[in-house]
Length: 129
Image (cartoon, rainbow, N blue to C red; front, side, top):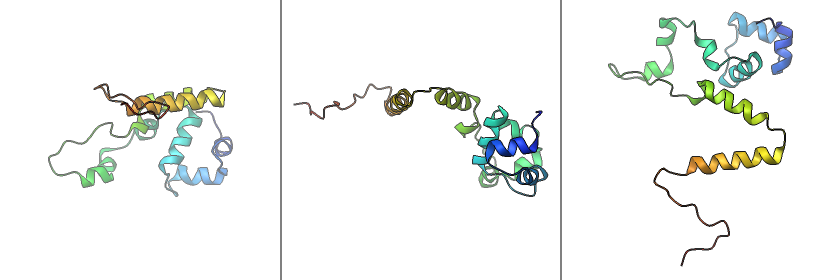
């Protein structure tokens, strides 16, 4: 990647010694730290799992809890999708905080609507008679 442990540590608020511990496997890496790393290194979250061997993958909590014979759920975590990373990056490139807030509110509104055309309540609070 061409980035020193020191520069990587600075970018995510760690010392280079802490980065070394993650690299050696001495410390476990939480999901939020992986998210930070993916943003700094400009890679999707899935990058960190590309070379995971089958034996390691079988020890994941989802696979352990899975009933025998049941197919594993694929792409269950939206945080692992490239689309999510691109969306978050684009959102934070909106420099005007008021515009960013309006985009956020619009997104929440759209996510709450259904395909059946449920109407939103009037903004002024007036009830239909």
